Image 1 (cartoon, helix red, strand yellow):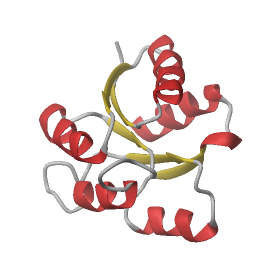
Image 2: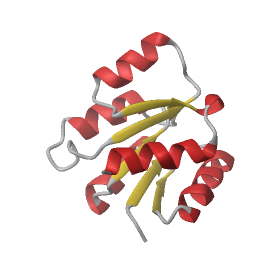
Image 3: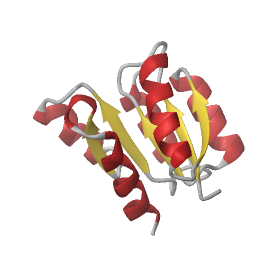
Image 4: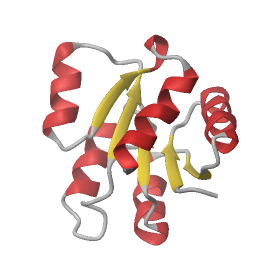
Length: 122
């Protein structure tokens, strides 16, 4: 197994799709269905990378990203936003808050994600 990837995503269908793709690429997958659980899981398991949706129950992805980046335990973990929000403002806000990359769900092939992740983990 390669690296641990934490997926913070509440859409079960999408999460399963990404999990299968990453698993077949040799990654170990951890997952959380909402922001609070995602923050707790990140602190506990110290994943190598986090895939973060922006539209989440209880707290949005921007709040999760801010919390992760302002905590010394999780600040160095690269976070890739994976969202259907695609406005220039959302992308800029995510990158300004410390995301390593911003992928729009509807605009990438699932193989692309593995390439991006491997690049970020080098």
